[in-house]
Length: 450
Image (cartoon, rainbow, N blue to C red; front, side, top):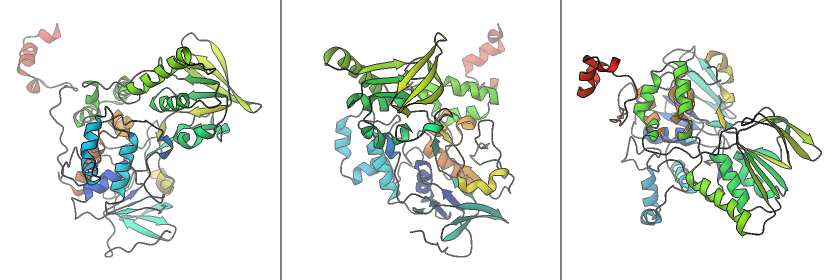
């Protein structure tokens, strides 16, 4: 039941958060070390639950557990992943398990543990509308309202469904965000999975592990191949504060190119998922008596989808050779990714917020939205900077650093050390004064212009 909240005095909150996902949870943890800031976060769900529809057996985190809610900027926090392991008496067992990648289920339990303990969270409270008046925001919910000088949006990304699939959404055509609850009840013979990233791979892995009545499985991807995530040390430097600061200095077209070039550092398949799928296909083809016909089809782009009796017909273009193919399916799983969108509660502010060509809010370097309201009333956005701040913004990797940046901006001083590390790679063009001695000498001698 939603209840009205009484403030300690007539002053509004310093900041109110809409949505409690990992990003705003990180921010709530860091605010504990800044007692002068009065914050409160609101979530329409009754409790914290991180991607429950994607928690299929064996799924793994694609980033280090040290990139948790707090450790990169506040390693002594009681809300670190290591603190969670210690509190649950399983640190040594976890270390002895020698995981190459942390089970996503474990990290989800860590996040829920934090959400049950950190202050300032209000679940079961859906913000219906936000109005700006005078020097503050008014957040209205079913049985009351709250006032705040600043907002932070942390509602996360929403499942993206292509236009060609929207008319058919239902029990046998759904986004992979519902996969855990839907796959077991399909009971169909022909299944098409659309999307060649990690989410699509996890769906395919689950289907191959328990085929049930399935006789045909087709996995299609727009990419050239089913490619692994680039998890090598130099490539992972894009998930660092120094890369973000270099990226922020780029022009629009330069940012688009940099984003495209680094796509597989984020959206590729885990090596373990690739091995699991390939070995399962090998076993089904050569080692086990199986009637399952599994087909992996990269370079495919769905043009059209239509009903064909109780089934579906997909018209697909093969970008490899230009041919047109027709696929038949009893069920279609859409592993087509996620997109950021502003929450409906900001509808009354919509015409005051500037959007980019991708429909994302234009962000300043400090994660504040560009809007027509007063500068003293800021709207911060989490997970909305994929195009403005780089590919890491929609991932967990820089979550704590971004939260620290928001805290510093809000209080107007460097409470947290958010300065970049001494990176291994020099991203931006350096001035002659900043160049290493050997490089500077060559530059002055004209060697670099030849």
